[in-house]
Structures are given as C-alpha cells and as structure tokens.
Image: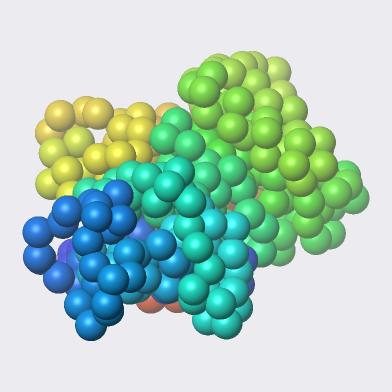
Length: 337
C-alpha cells in the first residue's frame, strides 16, 4: 500500500534503497518533477532538427538524448530510461556519449519520456522495482513496492528468528515482494501469499520463480482461502487510503491499481480492509503468533484500538525512518477460544 503524508503523496520515507541503481531518493523514484515547462515536440523529432550550438549534426547519440530528455523529466529518470532503452550502462553514457541510437530506440524512448512526464511511475516503465536488496517485476496490475514496507520485513524477521519452521501468511501480496523476500531470508519458513487479483498473482508467481522462492500462492479475499490454516506470523500491507482522499488523483497514484490503494468505501477512513484482517487474526494465529500490518501515518491510534479489541496482546506501533507511525502489530498469548 502507498503512504500519504500531509505535505505530499510523494514524501515517502526511505528505509533501504541499496537495490536501486544509483540509489535514487523516493522523490526521484515516484515523483513527477519536471525541469522545464517548454513545449515538448517529442524525441522522434530530434532527427529533423539540429541542437543549438551544433552544425549540421542530427541528434542520434545517447548523450544528445540524455540532454534533451532531462528537459522534460527528472535527470535521473532520463538517464535510467536511456540506459534501459539503449542497453548501455551509466559508465557508457559518460564515457561514450556519442554512441548512436537507432530509429526504433528513439521512438521507444520518446514514448517512455512522454509516459513519465505524465506522472506514470518509473517502475512501470522499467518493468521492475527494488525492494530490500532485490529487483521485482512490476506491471500496472500491482502496486509499486514502497521502501517503507521494508519495515515490515525487518519486524517479521525479528519474530521469526527463534521459530524453527515458521508458517507465514502474506495477505494482499500484490507483486509478491514481501512474501518472496521473507522466504529468501527465512528459507525454513512455509509461506503462503493471498491476493484477490489473478493478474497480481501472476506477477507474484513470476517474482517467486525469478528468485527461486517456494511460496504457495492462492486467490481469494484475505482469510477466505485459509479457512482451517494457522500461522506463526501474518503480515499485511492492505489498502488504507480513504476513498475520498484527493491524493488518489495526484502524481503516479492514478496509474496504480485502485484496488490496492483504497477499500473504496465512500466517506470511510480507509481502514475497512484493516478491520477485516485484524478481526480475523485470532482465528488464524498460533499461540505466540504475531500479526504485523502496515497503515497510514494517521492511523496508529485507530489500529492499536482494533488490535486491543480483537483480544491480542503486546500491542505496539513502529515508526518508519521519517518518524511516522507505519506498522502496528500484536501477538496471540495462550490459545484460541
């Protein structure tokens, strides 16, 4: 799920960015900052005109492409898109700026720059996003993994450290980034991942295959397909943006699946899915098992109240690196009623 702050939907906290090439900041990854507002004629028009200060030279090189593309989109975004289209590295771009682009590459780059300038997340254009040191395939069918969700991984690993063969459920898995990461870092765990979207599950299965992670994926709504199953750990990053929140129409959010962003309840607080997950936790946790759930920065008090009311113990909330309350959790002490 995406987090929203009072200042900007793009102010995402950075927990771990080592998996991103050149470690872009969250605003560089998700933002839609434009350097200039000059009319954009398209990259395909480069071959029909000359650059200022050049004599008779048509724009056909990666260096020229980078200089022009960054007039319309963020400098880092422009560089990553050119590297993606041309197959060159950052070192190539610096050392060999005169390397030529083909007509097909120019047209493809033109399309990607236009899409990025419209606010579409860079991860959708590149087809992948970094999460906790690994790259995950993403499409428009799944939410782009956010760095603040890495806090869920760290908290989960702390609770699995002393469990011999833990059983873990990831509810609303999306791209599978959370489930696959936990399986890779805790190979003795048995992990099941649930999602309502068949298209999202297809992406998640691909990511599990790419990382050679054995995860059981099931289609369904939260606990629906897990009727008689119990877990040492349940993790969830559900939709938690209120349906009326204006941020849903800003930045890159209109390009992401609405089902993964909000519960769709008009006039609601965005916690409809969270209530279902917390309410069903006691029936699916093993004694001593934990529920960890991500939520909006403004939801800490409400989620703690839900956890207490569900009969769970050791209720706590943890902040992300920006200091915002981001993940709450609790455990089941004793047995189930």
